[in-house]
Image 1 (spheres, one colour):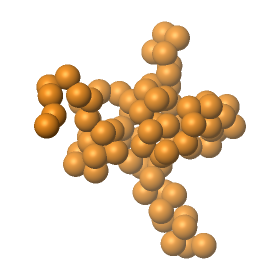
Image 2: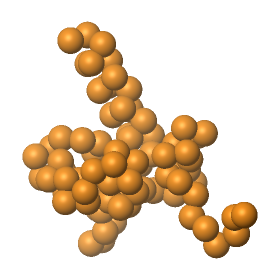
Image 3: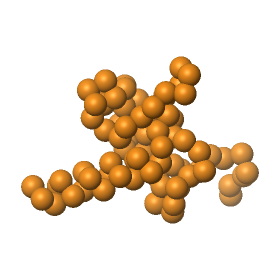
Image 4: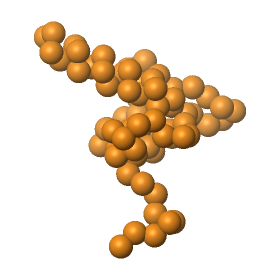
Length: 79
């Protein structure tokens, strides 16, 4: 039984459509099932989905995450 206070699984939200908010590094780590430190390393090395800062906070546009996944899938098929 779920309650209104439970957070939806970000992966399910992305599969169903774009969420109505920007994603956090925690969301990205959960979506890709990697440690949060990996998300920060991706950003430092310019790998992974592009992020942006809002003040001191790192955020990801769900549309950019979708695009990144599509590009990775296309690269895998082409390889």
